[in-house]
Image (cartoon, rainbow, N blue to C red; front, side, top):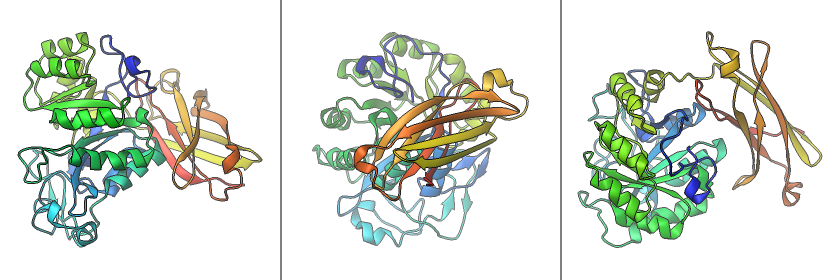
Length: 385
């Protein structure tokens, strides 16, 4: 995600100057249920999030609370629209939710196709999705879904604090995290619990008053409902805010947003949006990790799609993540270089002293993307000896 100069956060958010020349981020709304116009995944499920994490999109998630206070990944206050269960999420314990299976692909209520299927899979917890993000290096856009239009609306800070308990415990680097909400009080909890985490004020419509509110409260992004105007984007950038409109499910809208200079788009069909923005998926990526004493060595390659000049495609870097079962041990960055018909990278990581006796280390290689290629993650893979 984009870098943010005011808080010196690496790799996440934005400078206080006008929008950067970085490629527009594509945020996979509710996991990105649609792939190039075809309903493929159920909303906010781990298979959907695994796919978009691997393919370089930002994971957009909604957090609701169960009866026993566990944050789970579901948009609605009720289970009816997307699962074979009925009733409110807050009336089920996490254990009881295990019997509730997603039974529709796509996002009912969006303009894109949906498909009814036999009930299968399960509802993911927020902890599970954040662990996936930590292990793949993916960016996360997490909404605290505590809103007055839902029956589980909590006027106290307790709801937001319960979600933040899980966020803090996940050890997800702040550089990968953006937390959004329609309710300023939820974002104020985030700022107290994680002062350097990026925040985004969601709004119905695209009135510019929200930009001034975000500036006054120190929220880093504004996320208005599409459509919006060039004047809106210009004002936001002038006040040092980044802009991520929702929900753009037509290529023409995505291209129009790109011309306005937005910093991200939120969409149910991230593959469509990437194509509309002129971004391409890596055709293939390979990597091997080998443990040599106190270091882990990496060698890998990636192949861009045909037709892209290697001089452009083979730019950027790969982030190496060394992982234990519960946390990221260390990271390193290596440059991508041209080699033959594709691009190559190589580097190494020093194993922290306290982890050198660990028998089951894993590692992830994440290409960070460039002006023509989306990011791409490979791993976590077992580190061989």
